[in-house]
Image 1 (cartoon, rainbow, N blue to C red):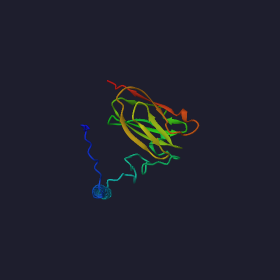
Image 2: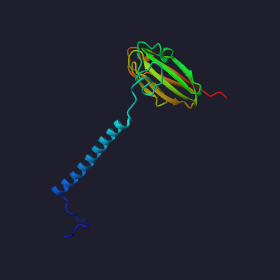
Image 3: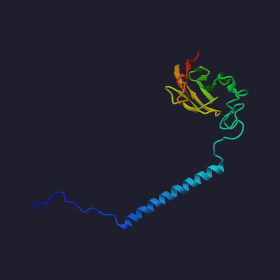
Image 4: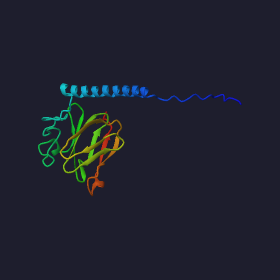
Length: 186
């Protein structure tokens, strides 16, 4: 009888003591992670590194009439949303105010400059809408009364389509808009 060149060794079986050792190691890791999480949460509360959602201009807004990041969607008078559109700032940047209502965005067409930081402030006057700008990573949920803000810089001149990507009613498919990114003037 010939012996196989591949001698099989017996399979090692884990003993109860070995399993208990592994369980204790994992229990120690889980306990350490839980303690670190608790310390991080406590440190966040003590240091005040929580989102600013309180007071006039809260949530990063310094807009008149925006309190706690919200406006009254039934009464946009007295806020910058009473006149939606593009504002050229003194420092060369631009600010855009957009109001979404069933079934249109106001303003219908937005003209911004390429290479210039543009800050968008968007709110809804009625129901939940979406604000998706194709060919970019801009995708914002527009909640009634909530001001959604972001800053971006369009680098390439040309038109960009905007669509509502949250179903908002029977005229949802009409919520199209356009951003025209203009080349910088020499």
